[in-house]
Amino acid sequence: GHIELARPVFHPGFIIKVKKILECICVNCGRLKADTSDPNFADRIRHVRDPKARMQVVWNFCKSKMVCEPDEPKEENDQMDVEDAKKGHGGCGAAQPLVRKEGLKLFVQYKRSKDEDEESKTLQ
Image 1 (cartoon, helix red, strand yellow):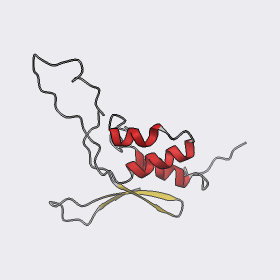
Image 2 (spheres, one colour; image 1 turned 90 degrees about the horizontal axis):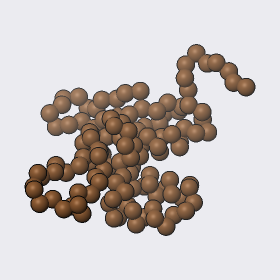
Image 3 (tube, rainbow, N blue to C red; image 1 turned 135 degrees about the vertical axis):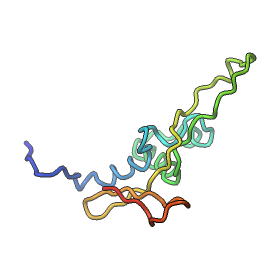
Image 4 (cartoon, rainbow, N blue to C red; image 1 turned 30 degrees about the vertical axis):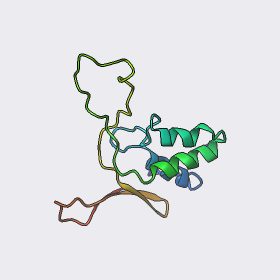
């Protein structure tokens, strides 16, 4: 069974896993921050079969990325080969926040850009 609460809350047993997943995906477009066509990342996850260990490898790679990497603009040449037209990451280029946990609450904290006067923006 289940109970209806007045406000939605995270299950205490899963809050750390939810935080790690939020740190691995873009908050704007929802894509994984890591690019599987990146040879460094692909080499790391290729040999990991255990799901928990694989999640740890992906999280370690993604947690430091603070920008959702966009595709490089395509040059419109008539001589484009099929090999050159590889599938890109497809990211949006948005800045990524830090995910903070306080008690049973998760917060996203955006870093201050140079033109803003505020310390940082915090959303709950």
